[in-house]
Amino acid sequence: MNRDQQIKKIYLRNITMKKTAIALLLSTFAATSFAQGFSGELLISKTDFDQDGFSDSATMLGLRGSYEFSETISGELSYTSGEMDDTKIDFSTLTLGAKFSHAVSDVASINARLGFGSWEAEGNGGSVDGTDLYYGIGGQYSFNEKAYAGLEYIMMDADDTDVSALTLSIGYKF
Image 1: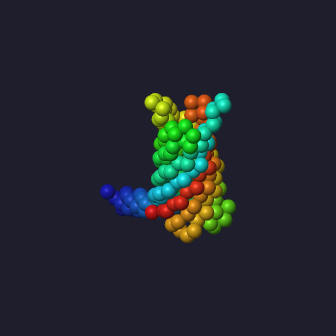
Image 2 (image 1 turned 180 degrees about the vertical axis):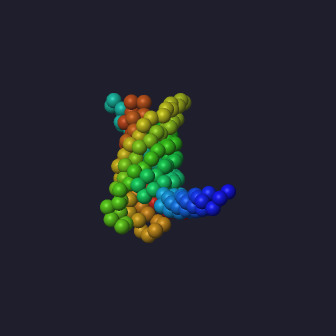
Image 3 (image 1 turned 90 degrees about the horizontal axis):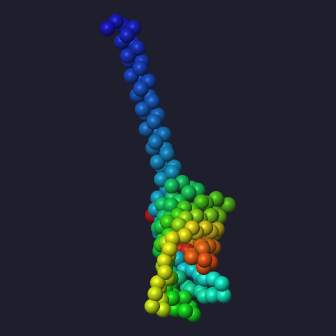
């Protein structure tokens, strides 16, 4: 190998090392910028059920876990359950969806939620279940870097029954 070939080989090796270093630096930046982490929430909601002359409501309790992919997008999994006030039918939901957030200040944000909810209603000797789309809007207030509270309004059409919930959440980021 002559001198020119050796210089070219060293030059190409240096370029490859620089590209590798830049790629590692960028991937580290991306991991710290976008992998925000997990959070957990306690939920309490006033849920209304309306269907052709039938109307009932329930106070439902639940838990929600989420993973924040970025400052604006989170994936969520939640479970809520409660008993309808008048008919004493048990209603529960398991949801999987996304939350899209927009900061309006350092401590407050507005958000939209979209996903699928698997639900079940049991009582009076029978049960019915299904999976339907849910959507909603809300807001969140951060007390500090870890603790926050939220208020949201969620809607779902569960087998021709309009289900709407006004939910208060208390959460903690891990």
